[in-house]
Length: 260
Image 1 (cartoon, rainbow, N blue to C red):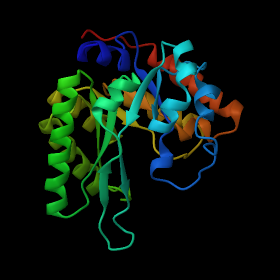
Image 2: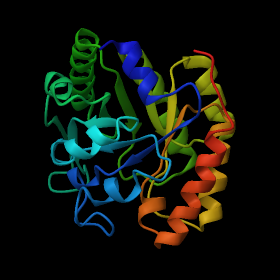
Image 3: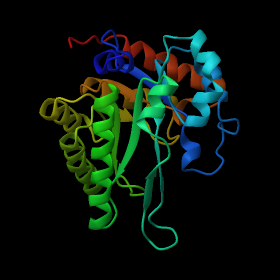
């Protein structure tokens, strides 16, 4: 399979992608809604999502389900990161699997965090690590979703500006898709226009009312994003409310088509 084939599966031209992340166990403690790691996949796979962001364990445990639902895509998280605020005050990032293993598992893309609130030495090591993964992705024909982020930082104007700059570094390192916390309509539109790399926008933790989530997604899509990464704002809500959010979000995503 080629890079182009996999990119078109992850980001279809007929709509904006809805990718549901369920990979939180790599970083977080036990959280509500993810006590059984594979449960959200079978619970929400029939509800008009286009795919899931998953851990290696989840990919292996759900092979039969995805074989029976080949329209759903899988983005494999290949790294983990532990908070720079803990222990010695430094972040710690590393790979947990390889691009070759991802291809062997049959997934459509791989995903890495790109944390930047660390020492300059760690930043250089991070860039080298990303560069090596990009080379492997090119060799195997599988896209890399790279997530520029300041881990644990509040969503201040300064942080938003910084993450926009980090997104440019992600582009320069060769990311095929950039995942970023929503920086506002104007900044998203500018990033889309300048970088000319598909942007997908992270939904973040459960917050606000269902209508707040739908409005945020609508702003994201109007700005030119090719995908929305929405998990906890759906599967941590009461079931009826989660279904309402997802149905309204899906309706918005189907209003857009793309010429690739």
